[in-house]
Length: 111
Image (tube, rainbow, N blue to C red; front, side):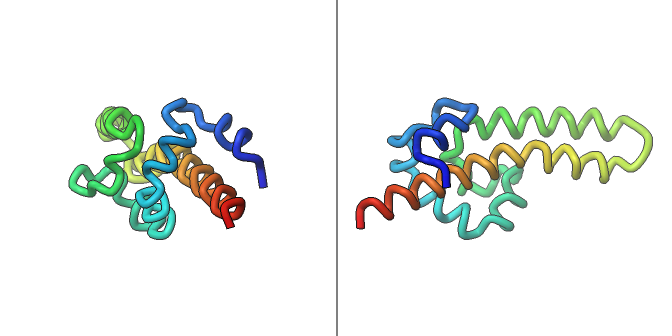
C-alpha cells in the first residue's frame, strides 16, 4: 500500500488533506461501505450523503451539461450517458478509496 504522503499527492483537488479526511471520516467510511448505492446516487441532489465532497456541485453541473448535449445527438444516448457517468464518477471513487486507505493507515498506526 502507498504511504499517506503518496496518497495525499494523488488527489487532484488539494481540499483533500489529513484534516479534511479526519473531519469527514464517518462520511468517507459510510460512502465506502455503501459504495454501490452511494456512487449510483452521486448525481441525486436529494441524497445528502455526498454534501461533504469537495467540488460535488461542479461535477454535477458538468455532468448535467454533458448529458444535455448528448441527448441532442443521434444514436444510443443511454450508452453515451453511461460512459459520461462512469468517467465523472471514476475520480470520485478513486478519491474515496484513497481517503479510506489513509484512514486505514492511520488506524493501524494508532493501535
